[in-house]
Amino acid sequence: MKKIKLLAISASPRKGNSQYLLEKALECVSELPFPVEVQTYSMRGKKIGPCIGCLKCYENGGQCILKDDFNELREMWIKADGIIYSSPVYVVGIPGQLKCFYDRLHNSFYGYYEVTSMRHMKAIGFITQGACIYGGQELAMQSIILHATLINSVPVAPDGSHIGSGGWTGGRFDVEASKDRAVEQTPDASITIDTARSMVKRVVETAAILKSGVSALSNVLEKDPRYVPFIKRMNEEEA
Image 1: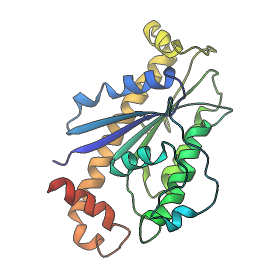
Image 2: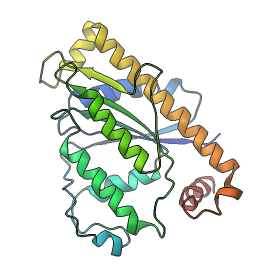
Image 3: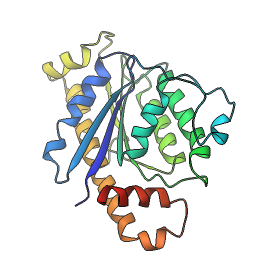
Image 4: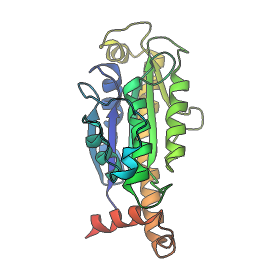
């Protein structure tokens, strides 16, 4: 059985509610019937500036001229089979640092690979939380869904009733709010954690299916150069 490399990203500039929900979600990994290697990344303290539209990455093998923490996260993203984003809601959307990462990630691939529209085939899940109920959690999820779709990956829902795992802190803005509500076992906090764990399970399952499917069909898919990096990465893992 192929090992699944899961990248868990906390997109908050703080070590608080997004990080807590991500950690609670990842507790289920040991219960899964798949070998999983978890790598975590926090955007707290990291510098990922906005794309300046210079298009130099098209000429430089995908390397951005901005000297910050972007390349570090991009390389982790490329090597992952499944990705979980845990993001706070900022003005009914994702925070700026995550949007900056998306913008530069998508652009850099035009220079990183010889052909465009690579079949990355990552399983991507998302956890969002904000201070207010109905405060933009699903709008933030939709942004991540669009990112997953445009980068030729698979957005994953935790179940048939939720498009992602969304929570709120009961109007609190402090970093302990989600933890306190989980300890209190408020109904909404319990639903958030349950769906977050389900999201992790579904992402790992989907990633396993994608890797096994591409492996089984590699003789056919390798004729399309957009699948070659995926197949090459799997072969390197097995070597």
